[in-house]
Amino acid sequence: MQITLEIKCPTCRSDSIKKNGFKLNGKQNYQCKNCKRQFIGDHALSYRGCHSGITNKILHLMVRGGGIRDIAETERVSIGKVLRTLSKSTYKIRPKQNYYESIEVDEFWTFVGNKKNKQWLIYAYHRETGEIVAYVWGKRDLATVQRLKAKLKQLGVHYTRISSDHWDSFVTAFKNCKQSIGKFFTVGIEGNNCKIRHRIRRSFRKSCNFSKKLENHFKAFDLTFFYINNGFI
View 1 (cartoon, rainbow, N blue to C red):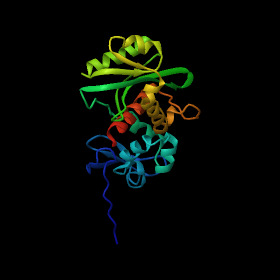
View 2 (tube, rainbow, N blue to C red):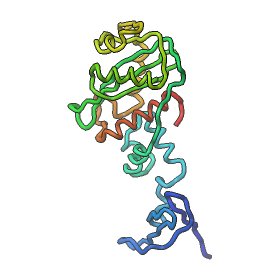
View 3 (cartoon, rainbow, N blue to C red):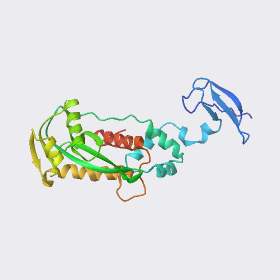
């Protein structure tokens, strides 16, 4: 009895495959004629990283607080597969409205590599809908807040009132519009800060999980903010 297995390229799923020598362990090596990807025949059948749907599952675990190594161990894929899935993601948020009666603004502290390399997130939040309207990265200073204000304008977002804490940079940057200043007016965004720290493992304040690459750090937040706003990936 002869059993025939159909081999497809793990990358492009093409069945236009040719034999391409042997690996050092003696296993047959194949090459895709279309995308030129090389792979071992049984690798495409047994390795979970090649299965359909695994990319979406990895992304979903990321936005639910899963760490890179935890996801790799749980789904039985390589750490490289998880990191590549994150680095290739292209999620970006767009404001869902052109006008908001009131927007809350706040700063959010993170770091990359070590705690001396601080990366401040300054963002705008709409309490009634739970939407993250816009955000920028930079230092904790007036210039970064002004960049957030400029981004809101660039995105065509109009608002009547800005709610913030007593930080002078917020008060100065938005001095030409109505302001509600004090912790009482930022309950919504402070609660959202807590949600972000639960959703993104690398944003935990006291944890061994942290970003090593700036690009992956930003992409993790892009991904999670898209999920928070839309409820799906």
